Amino acid sequence: MSLKSRLLVGLAALLLLGVAFWPLWEVRLLAPQYPEGLGLQIHINTVKGLKTHDLESINGLNHYIGMRVINPDAIPELRYMPWIVGVLILAGLATALRGSQRMLYGWLLAFILLGGVGLWDFWRWEYNYGHDLDMEEAIIVVPGMSYQPPLIGSKQLLNFTATAWPAPGAWLMGASFLLAAGVAVTERRRRAAAA
Image (cartoon, rainbow, N blue to C red; front, side, top):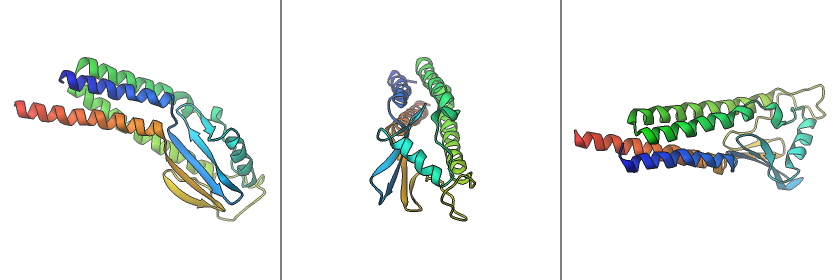
């Protein structure tokens, strides 16, 4: 790879450091009794309320319908996600240092696989969270109702409108991938033109 391409791959890898500072996903809940809304931010290593007491408020509301408490310490993915992203950053930097196009393709493939597995795992967690209800503890029971929040977009859950979108950390990950993919395309064209 050219020096410029190697620098861009290094920059793509370093962009992933942003997930340590910004949330990956955001979920918001709006209802008549909560006009200011409630929300959650999913970070690489924790889940926090958008406002100081939002997580506690959401857990309190969820108790009424038999949903489990959201306890970040009980979500194993939040313990190993920082390590996975760390390895991805180091692999990207190694690719930039080595300048190997083959390593770049491998890095991009790992990025795609890890991103796909991460989204599937998040969807699976939401599915279990919204369907695995404790009906014996639930105060409000609506037969046949499940409360799975959306992965992306909006969904009506009783009188709440739940909305979920990628947050700045996810956008940085996307920018990192697109930058590295752009380098791969440019390098491939450069090699084809030189042949």
